Image (cartoon, rainbow, N blue to C red; front, side, top):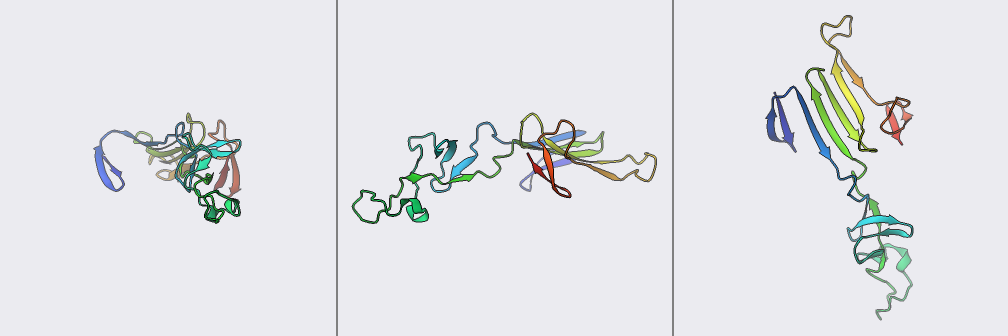
Length: 173
């Protein structure tokens, strides 16, 4: 029997031979960028970044004291500081985990294995890492040992291309 936990709290007991736990991310509807000044979801445009709301490319949270582009300009408010608050460009930052489509853990008692799958490209596939035990009744000194199967450069039908960065580490794409 397996126990499923969420953030350290038990969710349920599982009695099946095969179990799949997965996280699905909104890869097709979520934004990849967010403005660090105002928090708006951003869309990359030819001119920079914009929101889908009425503000567009103007950031209501823009602080020219943090960005040199507003200094020295007459902002027209009569205070003479030359700083145009709330009227500058958005400040984009990548949204954490926006690169993930899904992540899953599959256990298979029949194969005596655990597979972790992480999809970062086409949502129809994933990088799969599997650990399985060689059966005790197998011939030779490997019986009962564990095998680790990992993605590798040049494998047929890869999820995304891999280039070795250094031993055991690969660049994706």
